[in-house]
Image 1 (spheres, rainbow, N blue to C red):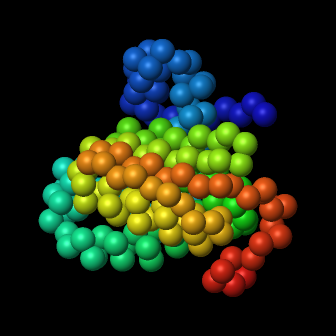
Image 2: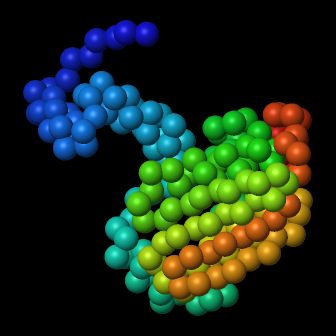
Length: 185
């Protein structure tokens, strides 16, 4: 579909400069910006996400009690992932949950998530530079998501800046056939 938009000259200059610096066309950059807004920022805002400076986040996590971090990892993160899965895929089946995890961290330079699949074996690798407390919280988060939504017990490894969670994947459930554990929305 072709549409024409009028934008202020200052935005047009910014688009031109970012396009040149990124080495992609203005059209591709505009599409990327709109996609990011509609597919991430808008649903994330509706789900309660907000932006926070990385240094402030580092300081907060470094100074938090490990029990509080474990609680956040086990209780809050899985609910956020469920909300996003329902928003993006209208489902909380295993495939929607895995796609949501990947999509949630797509393009994130601070926390990078990679999903590796070989046959029925899956591995989620998260790399970051937020320290050991962040790794522990991430491990608790991913273990809970895998256990709650993928119905399998994962194995995990934790380092200062990396978390690896490995598990056997169940065959994907047909989309929409699994109701949210918290009921219809």
